[in-house]
Image 1 (spheres, rainbow, N blue to C red):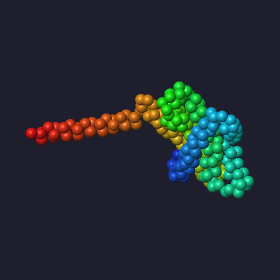
Image 2: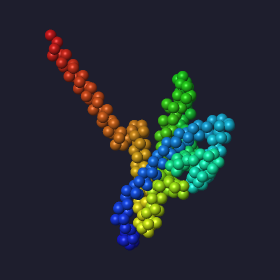
Image 3: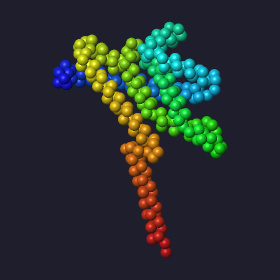
Image 4: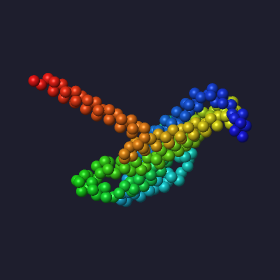
Length: 259
């Protein structure tokens, strides 16, 4: 079966067009990365609003439930065509794609942050108040770092979903990976080859993102684990050893120069 499928795939054609495929992937990654930064910021704000008092909690709940129920393609068409028609704002394709993904994924990430914030023990907030810390400082210095550790794996999954959902943005003209594949296939008719190559690229991106977020997660643990943590620990050990060596050399020099 594998040999039969391999005979249908013209890998040389896919390799010859690797530049176009990688450019489409780069566009998808750029849109996803910028959307993730904005979604995390908006999602954290929504999570705080959801955990606060009315009317903020009502507004956050309405936003979250609306955009969790709207498909990606509907949001993309609504932002690119609908908003421009009503408001007169003409978004570029790139900006419309970023806005669409941010609107959708900020709703999901807000729920991730909300559950992560609620998982932090309430006694830590009370201990911070007892020490004279202000509530904003307790949130930024004590609660948020712990909640981020809890939310990080799910945020990685959101980034993988964003990269995949950029494939829908071809409907508004974004030249990401799927749009590039369609353009190439319409000329060469190598549909099986090109869509298989696109699938392989998406899978490679998913493994890469998963590995990156697992590495960050291990580094943020207490005590830190993983290769980055070991490298940082080794660097600190060498730095301390260098200070001690200089101190010993200075001490010996003072001892020999004494009368």
